[in-house]
Length: 257
Image (cartoon, rainbow, N blue to C red; front, side, top):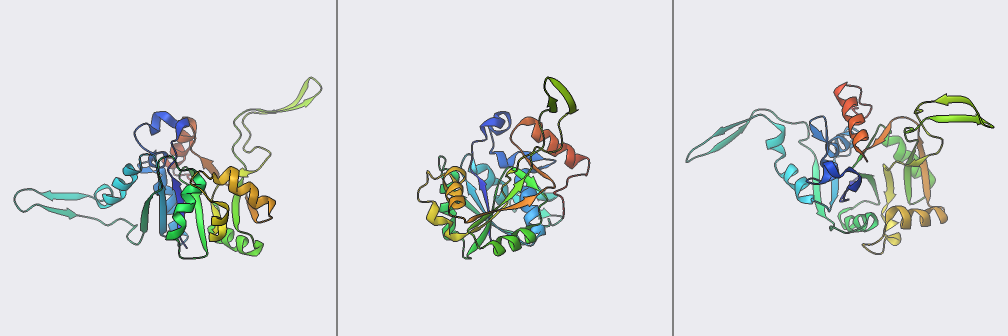
């Protein structure tokens, strides 16, 4: 099953990081967040990726074209007969990566639409290039197939950003500073999707989240797989710091490999 990763957005809320590189290339530890997402899927046995590129897609192309160079220790022999010797092998030898230029201004639905001709199976996995999770991908797929719909999203509870108050009249009865989770579920990405989704994505201007998903929900073809464990997006500098701290402390929940 192919894994489609949306990598083309501008990342405007993280401008200090994305002025010179796309958001999926913002590092967590010494690797781009995109690498962490791909390692997570590869651990579950899904190693064929379609990266939907847009803004500064050449940076991602350069990274994978020179993956051996970036990932291994190297000895260079200079002169008339130059030679490069790689001293170790990375663990991604069996990955297949399709780098698909889906346009600078194409919306998320349009990017998915452009990826469909590269998907031979009836189903594919889909996620964003700026979020990490420890959802069980096999369980997610199994759940999707029992629902009989066209798409299943992973429903997550985002980390609380503000203190939570319980009020009785004008009195505060309890206070929790930045609770672990908020009340409602949100779309956490990590989808399983049927190729018939193309019927809901007619144009490059189609927005997956505001065009296709509401229509799928209305038609009864969208399911939610509840995931109450770890999920974290990378939308602002604070969230970059959170992910890097987890990695540096060897407590990253997504590191299942």
